[in-house]
Image (cartoon, rainbow, N blue to C red; front, top):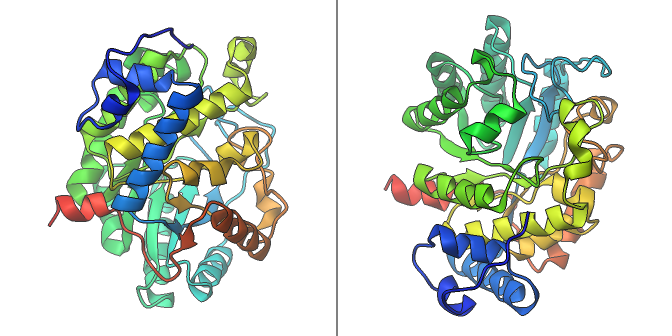
Length: 367
């Protein structure tokens, strides 16, 4: 996947540019040795200056693994019959929210396989209202529930959701077709329209990509970064692609970069995005830790400022595997919290307890 590129300018000059060209991005994605260290040092400096050395918790609730989509890379795709399908009860969701509230997380993420039926839409709306009442409006909610109609997005926004994460996964339409069935439910332009609708409704909008996919090139990753900038995203969640044996893409595992190279590319993507979009929120994703035991700390040290402790009941976690070897499957919420606190302090950051940690980019654009 790497390319041998000669810099047109010293890396120090590239890193000081206000706007990176695609050639700049290609070069930065291929850095190694001392130049790679300079990239990471610059990202750390930008993070400290523009969003501070504070990390915000988003308590993660993996609400359901029912999904109507059949994406070729995802473990909970509709066509995978291996997993027992589940949906958390209202009581279980509210118990997880209460844990976040009592422990000053100030923010949660409700994530699920994609469902669009009326019962699902109404259930999420009801839960959002109950969360707002139970916490006196002190818990901000991020949703990651896939493509929905504008009416659904508005209902959830008015019920109390403030942020929405909808990962594009790849910004190259041709590559998108290789990763999804070719039908209306998996249409690239429909994905783009959903992101635009979320912005129009008023959400803080997040997206992200997988790094190191089959068929993906360094040029694709550079274009992903340009896509983030042009769409003017408020937050990003991205990490290395990790294969799953129960997916069609597993057939191409011999063509993948080694895991360590995928991890290194993911770190570079985080660092470059921090320098490009200085005041957005960037998550240190769990997939980073899947490859490297200190993966999330390393992501924090090169620009990430959000981390997601898992609040999902342990009994469900084995059935919410988007990829294999996901860590922390047997950790209760308190264990996960203690572990992440230690990781954040190792990275030299502090935790923004009791703070929503809204995207500064969003605030500044709308002021």
